[in-house]
Length: 330
Image (cartoon, one colour):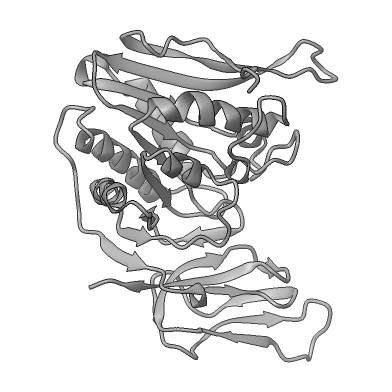
């Protein structure tokens, strides 16, 4: 395997707090010998576990960058027993243009693993995480939200794993995060996901969906800040007492959780996030955008459940995810 073209300006083995960059050479029209400079903070104090904390895996999801920028500013090495690696904007080109995917190569970071050192810009960043950063870590937290096209109730999530002991460690870390909801998450498409890359190495992995609409709120930012701190304390890396609250456990038992649009049109949401619905209840109507007087297409719930996610923009396209339902685990 070829070496990574990315070079860090920080020393991962040095005690103290360092702020620097992951420098990726990128020759382009406006800078022949240019570089992409991905901000990174490393805080270390002696021996102990390592946490890798990431945000903006998708560039228009903001709770991660907000919480991690604040943590990078405030973190003190003397409060640690181990190491914290903070990358507030994993897909930095996408973050700077407020887009889900990279403006350079249209790469979706969360579908680009394991990456390639001689691939596209997005693949090179994924490769660096795959071969350099994730192997250093014991626990990985990747903060997501719905971006511009989805909105979610705020939850932390883990996946069902073939290794029961690893799954139990992930569930314990998710509990420590203490989001208002906690999810055993079913993914639509797992090919190339960062989640799988981390889990396949046997690491503890926690992800989130904390809101959406292409922005963040005071509440969703606070959930991210508290959750990250809690996981660091739970992992034995940060001193202090966890600030925990109640969390409702959710499950996704089947693909009936998902409703996808089979039409283009004007999207009328008929249920709000956090509401409960029964199978057959109307959850959305799609009005034809090109004429008046025509009836809407009516979509109904395929199962009993809690409205956990919804399409956010007022217009929708065929194939878009419209509604996600989950069930509470008592």
